[in-house]
Amino acid sequence: MTDRPSRDGLRQESRELRVTVISPGLTRSELTDTINDQDTKDAVTGQMGIAIPAAAIGEAVHYAISQPADVDVDELVIRPTTQG
Image (cartoon, rainbow, N blue to C red; front, top):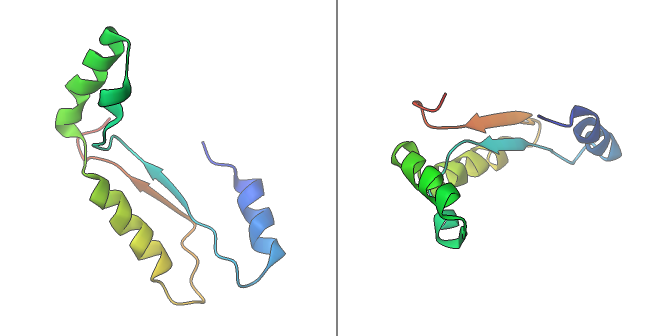
């Protein structure tokens, strides 16, 4: 769920401010190493087979910030093609 009024409010603060919301889907990370509840850890670990690499999120950030100064990328949803 996005918070469009807040984003638009930030944009109104300055014409030079660009605001992008990046919503990542299932992404490989060290998250499963920090989960203490075994049932939760097993559930998350089982989903990691379809997870995208963290570099995919980095590439999305790079895409958004590398646009010309007069272009504002409003929102990007980055997720595995197999994620429902």
